[in-house]
Length: 130
Image (cartoon, rainbow, N blue to C red; front, side, top):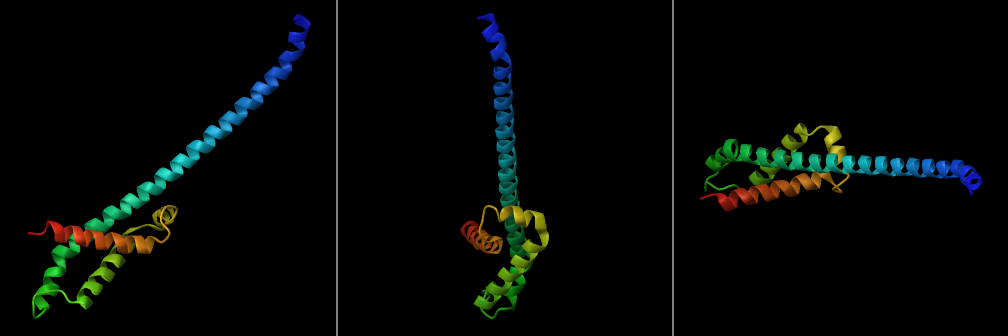
């Protein structure tokens, strides 16, 4: 019995070593995936915060001038389109390429995502305005 255990010990050690190596590989793969997903989520969150800040900035700095220039004191469709395009350009200028690439792992089109977030931010501002 002792001789059998002595002969099987190297085989068992090899199997345990292989199993441990496989386990470490799977753990490393899990950590890489989790880190990559967190980075992509952080990028989307940063873009959303940038959009909100940009919309608030334009609401305070540009919208009053557009309204004052309008004969009826309201923004025209053209003015709203100009402001939206300005917001998109400002947001895109503040987002590094690396962040854009990370966000594209979660959303199909970062540009469409930004435009949708701008619409939502403007709607949110309208809903809280007195």
